[in-house]
Image 1: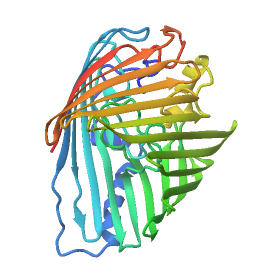
Image 2: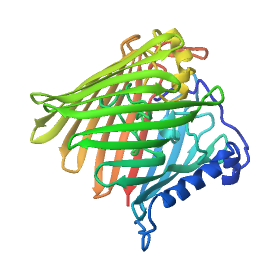
Image 3: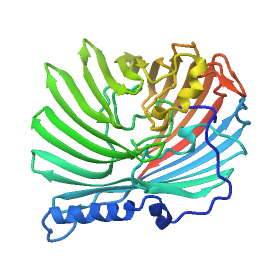
Image 4: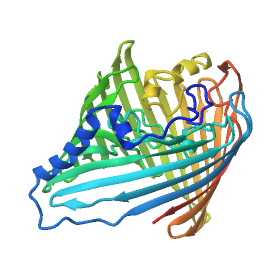
Length: 420
């Protein structure tokens, strides 16, 4: 979400943490990480030799500028992100390790939102990330975005323990029935889904069906911990991928249904969930259509999605409370409004060039967030992207938001990314 900096603050002059200091925040981290690795080695026979894997990576260098808003001054931000990944094996055990670091240099008081300032794992249980520098104009973060071990039980199943990416989403932009870490639809730089700390077991019950069980602890924003224990079933029925999950999500009873298929040349995706909370049952649902067209002998793709989120704000006066709510703190909200529409169109105007236009609309207050972009492929693994964000609708004053997107200032950015 591209949001004005209504909450939070930037610590100035904080000491640089060490890995030991990070571990001290939760005493079990050191023991937990060691047991994660040792347990994997004890569960599988020792191979004649371990197999190392190549180290792959991703580098991003982005420069963005913003006009002033009621909540921040105009200015620029320079973002550099480096990600290193490897997947070594030890017998039947495969390790997945990814380390990421982000350096942000910004003008005084400038805050553009999560996508421009680095994303961290949502509600991490293990302290595997932290700040190397956290000052007013300089922020340097790092952490293990993935640290897990998987044990394959032949062709019948797989058991994975540790920080891992998990997605049960069916729709593309709004994913209210994904109980883990949905993508932020406005984050222009996130190439990889953030990991969650969990134990996951997958049982393959047929060529196109499986059972998926996840147990996940997470720190509660109010203190203590919350637990998630869910079971999901998925199978293919007459060309439609149908799934359902149920159990306990953040200590609350929850369940969901989802389906994806096609009607003619249109793709149809839908998902919905019910959540039992202290305030009653919350309904969250999304429905989307997508299609690939041929426009002047080039691919043109259109996606339209609608979302109703019972955790969202009913009216503009509730937006601040929603931004401070428990679901928002846990990273469960894609947008703040209760009813929203997303439309994205992308066209390959040249084999090496594509243009796109993403629009998010709040159906409650009528405001919109518009984001055009153009991407050039400079080499096989190198691309340059130019883009912008602009809010349309009633703005804001220093004390309140008058609409969800209207207070978003005009933001322009250029980003160079490379995979190696």
